[in-house]
Amino acid sequence: MKILLIQPPIRDFYQTSIRTQPMGLSYLAASLQTQGHEVEIIDCQTEKKKSIAIPSELTYLRDFYPFNDRSPFKLYSGYYHFGMGWDEIRKKIEDSKVDVFGISSSFTPYHGEALEIARIIKQWDRRKVVVMGGAHVSCDPEGVMKKPFVDYVILGEGEIRFPFLLEQIERGKIGKVEEIDGIGYRANGEIRIHPLETFIQNLDSLSYPARELLDLDRYRIRKKRSTMIITSRGCPHSCAYCSTHLIMGASFRARTPEAIVNEMVGCQRRYGIQTFDIEDDNFTFDQERVKRLMSLIIETFGEGNLELSAMNGISSASLDGELLRLMKKAGFKTINLSFVSADPLTKRRMGRPKEATCFDEILREAERVGLQVIAYAISGMPGQRVEEMVDTLISLMGRKVLIGPSVYYPTPGTPLFRKCKKEGVLPLYPSQWRSSALPIETKDFNRLDIVTLFRLARVINFIKGKMNERELEEGMTLEELFQVLKEKKEVEMETRGKGVDEVMDENEAGHHTRYDKEMAFTWIDLLLLLIDKRFFFSLRKDPEGRVSILKEKSSKRVLDYFFEKAWEKTIQKS
Image (tube, rainbow, N blue to C red; front, side, top):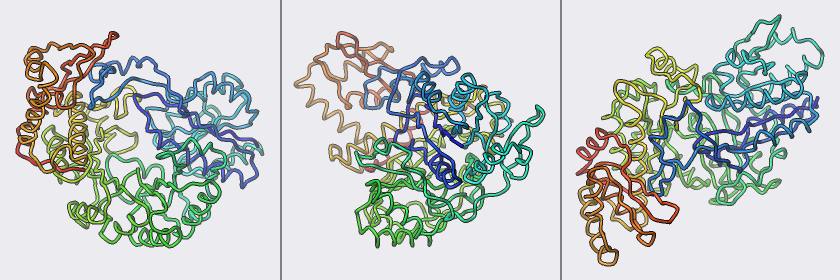
């Protein structure tokens, strides 16, 4: 049979382009090819970007995201359709002449885009078979099957289930679908979901992803061809906000280091790839396995000849100094660590694993071997308080890390999702269940608090960056920073006319201040205003080129608490 696998476009305020390679579809394609099927992949998430109207259910976000902000602390610049337009997708579908379409639906808020592709297919030819899989399908298979555009759903790993399903379709024996778990279908008009029970134990038995079906020049990091690589599946941890166990199971299954390195060698020789992003659910869970893998990579490629990353994140619970040294030698420059919160109670409540080595020791060792660290903090989870979330930012401000601010989003099937639903804080529309939509409000915090925390993290990272560039001295307190900025401003005022004190005065009543286009504002102006007024300010430019400083909505309780608690705390570079 001829199969077309599709990764839909997405609609959002942003797109993380370096994380869009459809590796799941590439694995699936390779599995189908071994069964004799003819397979193509259409990755609709091209570099195209078109500005579109914000959906009605997200219009409340206009109060939080000034799209024409030109400040270094701005958040989003618009709402976009990222990738191919619907007309282009429709033409590719109609020109494909395939028997079966497989559509990936990996993220609940983007499920609407996946359904639109299914609708286009059925509108063109209702006889075509539409199969949908991906993380969202595993979390809500019945909800997906309620749509008339989808004929079958596949839960969990598709490398075995999809070929089996195609075999039954080809033979006209759909009743035999019941013989395998993890497939949803209709029988006599009734939706039937065979629950997910089994997972692939021998990952080395899988064919390497069919990367030849992708336009590999589209996936680059620092202009170099890159690819994702998966070295293990599943995670034994039971974090309350994570859906990994629903998709890949709670048992940890790993590939052998030899098989992984052979795949990497093939990628280098065949495609010229030297940059690899490890997309495991829990890469370092088996610490000894990762040490053997890193040693084998060093032995095969030498030190510093590859660029490695693990953007999906690494648990600091399974790191030690030896592993960090090997990771650095193998090609890691940065490690992404899941910090979650500075509050141990929140970590326990969220089911986070206990750390074998304290977080600060991991940071010290990372600094010794020359690894940069991004520490991810989650805000906006039910049960959190504003004070705890601010304390987490202050904690990371004083550590040599870049802060990865993550806004919690509810994922169907997880304990925290059920808690949101039970407590009545779950937004009505699934399109709101994304970080950029600031989805959750509780009695303890609101959306303005969360977006203010998000902005604050960006400001802290900006200051850390200035320390890295040696434009600011590392280790100064906020109080010292304020004095240093005022001194810098006094020097600047000698050649720049009106100074920040006048801007502060005019903004006291909430008015904006406008200057001619020749008048340039700097990050110093905006930081001084933030510290002095405890409000965020944006930079706006009108059609004549005149620039305005405008006070933006900010959470007074977040900023008051931050400056009260952090005033005498030191800031460390990243």
